[in-house]
Length: 314
Image 1 (spheres, rainbow, N blue to C red):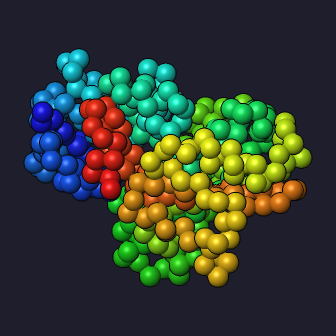
Image 2 (tube, one colour):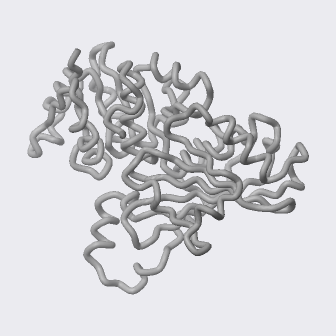
């Protein structure tokens, strides 16, 4: 069977990467809108209703408008915006979240792709909260260092076409402590409140590392850093795209430095556990354009269409 796929927002960073993945898949037909018609309501509506699967790579308001154009009960939607990530009528597109999540995605027609930083945070933390190790009222904090491609075309252009000195150093942002990923980070990790999250953009194109400091003295159970690594390794042992490094993770460092670009151009996410009896540091490493966006979107499409989950991704 051949499936018709439409990418609404095909010229943006996420849309371009999704089309790149789609070009590797044989049993689909990508239907495209002419550039001059990409804001034409009727042209978009016709393609949305013609497609078996629609990827929405749009701002939140435009995604909501696109949903209102659907006039059939057949078209499946995979939305890459923030608009529906905590909407209980939508499925959160993180297959590794729970053992049942993959089946929920398979039977859903409305799936929201997780935010990049949220993906790294939730996959590292959720099993520990679910196991009763991290209390739900833990005062969580984390920070992420990411490439500038996550900011879309405007930020990409700023970095690639400017020689301003301040762009050469990493820059913290969202310092109002109200980053758009926070609601999903709290909801799907199982915490009672949002973490204190500070993202940082660096002068490189892609690659994301979410770092989460933990203090064992505040845990509900007496566990070590090695115990945490073993629990995460067991939890994700059957997952294709989530890999947990051995506890002696220093073997994966380069002269003591962490390479956060090691997962670039893949759909893998690696989790590292560092620390000792008093302090633990979790790091999730992934491609913000891969598992953090377009790769995750394709992974969800594969599940929804009953294809091998790795189709187009390996």
